[in-house]
Amino acid sequence: MHYQRIRINGEPGPSGMLREQPKLLCVVEGCERLQQKRDWCDLHYRRVMRDGAPGPAAVIKGGPPKRCSVNGCERRCVTRDGLCRMHDSRLRSAGDVGPAGLISDEPRSTRPCDVEGCEQKHYGRGLCRMHYRRAWEPNAYRKKPFGDPGDAKQLREPEPQPEHCEVDDCTNKARTHRLCNKHWRRFAVYGTTELVGIEEICRYCGSVFTFERKAATSGLAYCSAECGKFSNTQRARLRQAKVAAPFIDWRQVAERDGWTCGICGEPVDPDAPTRTPQSPSVDHIIALANGGEHSWKNVQLAHLGCNASKRDR
Image (cartoon, rainbow, N blue to C red; front, top):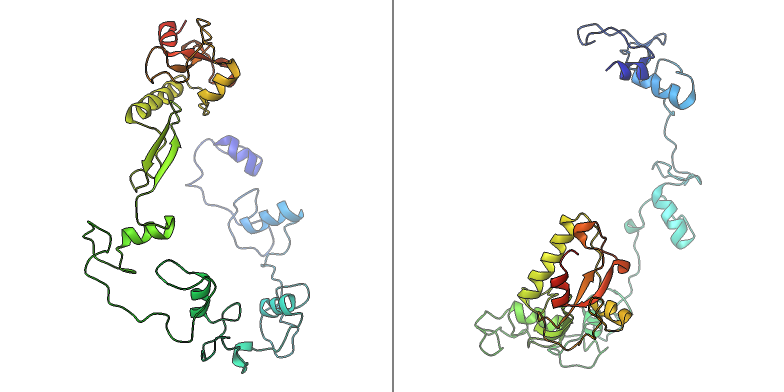
């Protein structure tokens, strides 16, 4: 408490609290604000810290706001060129500040769509919004060549959706292009309504496995629940030892060590069944329990049986 008073006011003050004592007014002549820091109010204290002088008692204002230099514009000036935000944007985009008012208030000639018979407003690449989407967003359910906007009328008549999805054994209600929401999203992402088999490498045992992309397996990183369990156990050991846990790929460790066990010196079979004594594993040269770190310098390739028998020695 007294240290804070010395930093703020330059003196420790009395031994008790200052709440019951009335605060004095600011020392600046004409200021009726209460003292906050070093005999000044907050306003004059900020001026002293910024400019070195408290200045007058009144609030210093910058005068009336400057207006835009364009004749007839009453907007506030925001740039060094004396322009408002609207006219500054026009100057940077078109090279001319234009009139004082909004351009949208003046009649403008709109460019029509290039498709014959279409009177819609131009959107992009010479087409209106509807024909632009037809030309640049085709799919298998619109039987037309890529880049063809079609005629001015609809490419297909609005057809009634069936009661159920057209995919076999699907009882969901059809929503878009005779498909339910699930199969339509799958088609939009993968181009097919069938389940897609994706190959991944297990982050623990290194084996290549194939799984079907679903919502429940969107972030799958392990080939089995057993590998995921052992990986979580390893990360828990690293957290318990209070060491950093970067991801170390055992295949890169094996290539560095020449597929040789660092404990027994025998070769390690890369095709050995997982979770067996002859399967490859990563061993910490200095055990984590003895203060070892989880880094590339402190790991070596070893048989799983040798690694388990070594324990923390």
